Length: 390
Image 1 (cartoon, rainbow, N blue to C red):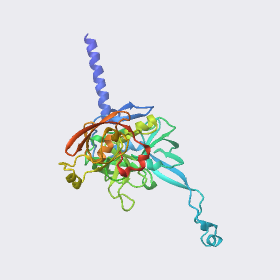
Image 2 (image 1 turned 45 degrees about the vertical axis):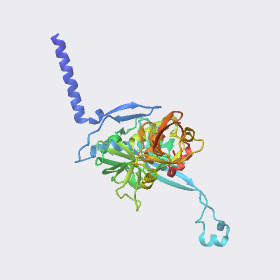
Image 3 (image 1 turned 90 degrees about the vertical axis):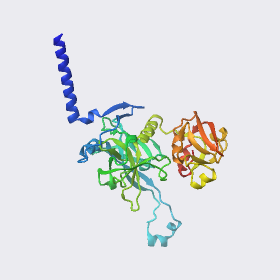
């Protein structure tokens, strides 16, 4: 019996020693777990809040993340407009063929993130929009053609696929755990100079009403983001993906310390739907809303600015059939409070078409509830983002 106990003690000692060595030398192996999602899309997900990392150097975070960030090169044919003056020989004599209407090849540059070892890449919709040819250049210099799996213009996200496996997929972090002031790194290919890492902090969370996308919940950062960074990775101090770099506010075209990234939580939802179904399905109830201004609050005798004013209801749409009227103030969807028109847009979008949702409204100081059968959000609403159509 003593022999077995001795063997057990030795086994436990060896296991603890191996674990200690891994924690000391290879912490990356222990801070994520692999999760299989849909249709062969396999991602690595960090559990819980990650370590903030050392402020002396972010070399380990960069080493962890940069192999998964790629360059996205696109080409498309653009046809010029032919002027009637082109048929005038005198005009052609003086101006030549500068107004040549023949198709011209236009190149574009962006970035992307390898999200699955079997070749799935996440980038921005605007990076590959209208492209006739897409090439992916990886950090090791390898270049491969890519095809579009699907896009979602309303969040400015797209999923690409290359024919490769055993790729260095990025580790997904927890964007919901980010705090203002946390360190972040932006990785991409600005101005085509090559892969670049810049450092900053989270300047703000939940940025919306920017008029960039239909669905906005941006992470704002002062890490330098420039043209060519779009679609690249925003990572935390441990090198885990927390956002997809998407846009900047600039009067010069270059970084002025205000960049915006799509949170990885939203990006993952969109990505998984695209891989599974080829597109993104969202809920819709047929209403148009606007934020409550102080004047509207006074007009409707409202005590708080919580909620969104229903400015219009589509005739014979889901909300109209349920009894919702223009002038109602929508205060909750399925018990979840509505803070403004942007939050309402997101609450309705996550509803599943065919299901019934309960809308809580205020009408002339009366609280009413309506059961609305959710429909599928029409694709053409992607072109009407400024109208806050829900």
